[in-house]
Image (cartoon, rainbow, N blue to C red; front, side, top):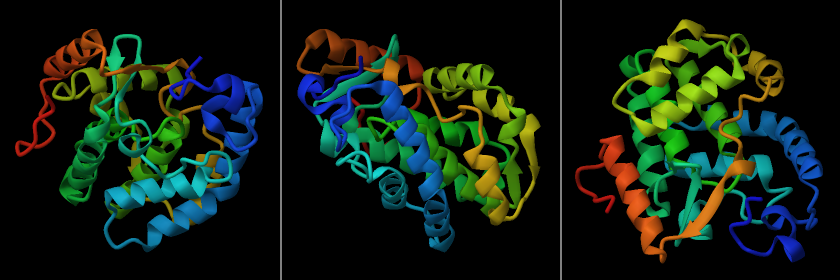
Length: 247
């Protein structure tokens, strides 16, 4: 059970407004909210001249504010002293969520890069993992808008969930090796109108990112966790910003 706040027994899964503990019910509510709020989120993105980190957060707020009181707030604000990991896979330190997502946004908004590095961009969003839940759906919408602006689209209906998630995991572990670029490039197609996104995106068969329910949270106050994170980050071999240290 992913319980980063340590209060599942009294506040339900991730402190949802209804204090619901049944994960099946929570996940149904997440999906229904996503579908209901999808037009508003896409409309918001379409109106942004340039997509910034604050806009990434706002998309999450639009999608999930009906379920989670922390919707639109990143881990640096909500859980600043805790690591979030999945098995041996660590997501970035909370203080680096902005750096990781902003790196992906910066590369994506160079139109000459989007068709060459679609997986690298998605991988940066995934490593940033700003939210306790809903990361996959949020980054999928932002990625789709960025593709549109680069005069292309990604045919997610032709992808398969497990191979995509495997490539995404490899991308997070080794962002210099092009794992997710290689997986996604065969699915690049011509630009499709934004109005056609609504049906295609809402019907995606589970391609909403790595399953948050299997996440584990642990405090950086534990020296073993800090050491594991630093070693994982070292193996990744990618510095987000040469003006900042990840250590």
